[in-house]
Length: 448
Image (cartoon, rainbow, N blue to C red):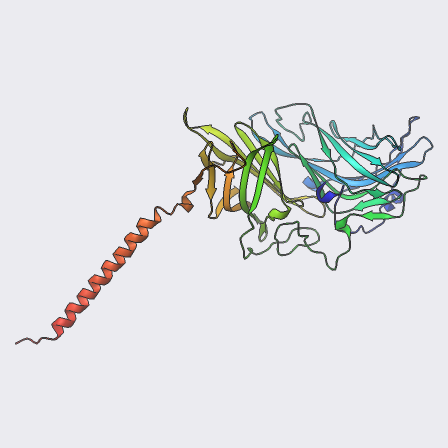
């Protein structure tokens, strides 16, 4: 996951990670093979963002705890509809959680934490250990587009599975890993969001440890601030991003690229600023130093997805259109943006517009616009671009091809206008001077 850790977050729990277990009834089932899981259901945010916390206590054959976890998670999924458009779905954990497939693990076998929920959705994570540490290896997530409540009008029906490799700093055995702020995994049109996480794999002697290994973001600071990985926002509260005045400076320009095999298939250089309409305008400069690029390249469609590593996800989709048999152009067709609350993973703003026809240029060339441009994603969100240079198709030798410049950058029209205006002003000055001179010359004579 981002930041080299499994779950990331800066905020302390108001209670012990295990306190909820002693406050709630334990509903436990066991089998001769080994496992018994406890699920604690907590009501999260109300309405659309309702989510549940899950507490899992996996027991071995001797009824001793071998794997413990408590966490919250949510999934943002982009899927294709029957009309060939794309929609964004939000999948939350429901109350009907089961636990098939969880495994305690040992020196030679990975520990597996697995849950199933809703209409055919499942999620699992694998842990392996050394003599002194344990760490996560990969996450497997399956979502079922037959769930019409979550995926209305989905074109492809049935389960879809993605596997994501996890980079996690090793945790000392007999230590509990704790992180409370949000972290993300993004792959194949799916963003997995995690927060309020407590986990211990390979529990020793059946007892949850009191020793905690905190993620870097959980470390105490002098004052809660927006971490440097977030966009350039002036202030932030404990629960939401706060409105901020327009930054004095334009955003830094970032360089992004995608590869297909060993070849670069998309190049982009751009500075990005978001303008979100809330009670007051919220303007955010995207920091290219902490923003990663992902996406897909194709012959007629290419998608660039940017993730600032914390709260902001921006996607640009380009397509090819046929102007004639010999002249093909590409253009920007779709933009989608998701802003998340960095503390609890809730969606602050989500916008999608698939009716653009911007940034068009002939196939095999690039598009450039140094001046500021505005993309109106919806009535509540705009994207301002600066120093844009983009080529989503037919990239050769890792370099931009000849650029077609936007009209804002075209100074050729301004030159004759400026010259003409200057000549007009000069002529006007000469005429005025001539008239004044004539009047003065008449004033030197008197009528006889």
